[in-house]
Image (cartoon, rainbow, N blue to C red; front, top):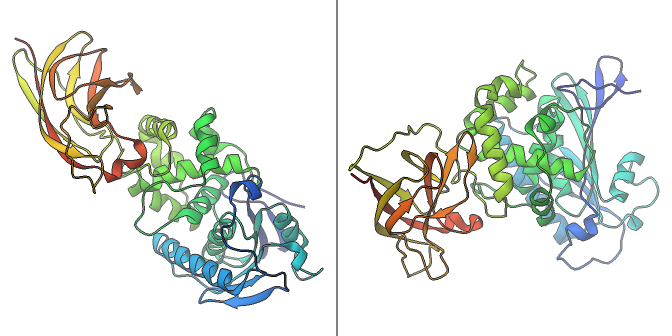
Length: 413
């Protein structure tokens, strides 16, 4: 018999009446033999062994070297999430991580459901929760970062007694398996990028408010990851996201709607923009939109100068424009598309058009097609709205760019 609260609880099975509960949280990956292939040589088949680190007890058929590497990854990730959630890890997280179930005799994995999940190339975390604390056991395949994903669930259950609503629980666990200290760039499995880029975008409402369950599909996990990554790394929303998450985990009366309701249009726009340009290496922090900049029209014969950074996405000019208007363009300065490059470029870009100053028109949370601005000449405005500009560069490598140019726009008399 099970029960599920529509907002904050994951599926739970009552164990000791109202005193303790067993929380199941799981991870899925699509046919992991295809999605995440091991690059390490297969060890000789043998019985599972136990390996320990400061916060983990690992039962596994991985080799000693592979086990050491996995424990190092788990400890590293645990340090990052414990700092993020501002709570030192409690207790030991016990993990059963299997490379080949043929190495595991009957009964060596104490939970049949855990063994079934491993057999499907997946994982699950079983947590016995008492109040605001718990004791967790992870069951996971050794492939694809599943153990790291499940360890995030285990940490939350042992330290907070909950993992939060499905969108947050699974989104943050997906982030956990990719998290690297000080690294804000997207680094996910390519099948995640391919799925998101080729699919109809899942709405924020569908992610946050739909009645969904943990372990449903890796595709749903991909959308939850995308939302959590955006909110955690975009400076427009990150300052609110950590307090929201802590409120959720500490069972406070908080919600996504209360936190971000006033920013709904901005978040929806940046979420869709993120999905459209998603790639490994993409930096939501560098591509965040400046919603505070004021836009005004230019008087006839007046000029306006705007600094434009190479290592940024679209940047506001502050200029409100109308279709058909013309402005004289004059740019000074140079930038580089690679920190190691010795060849600086002007706003005219290179022969292939990379490094050229380009623009878009923003109007009512819609963007025009991108158009060339260049280093000099006459710019004819294609539509009404706000003019934004950037250095034309692969979205995956914006963080490698350096330098800046100054754009001067002059309105005709």
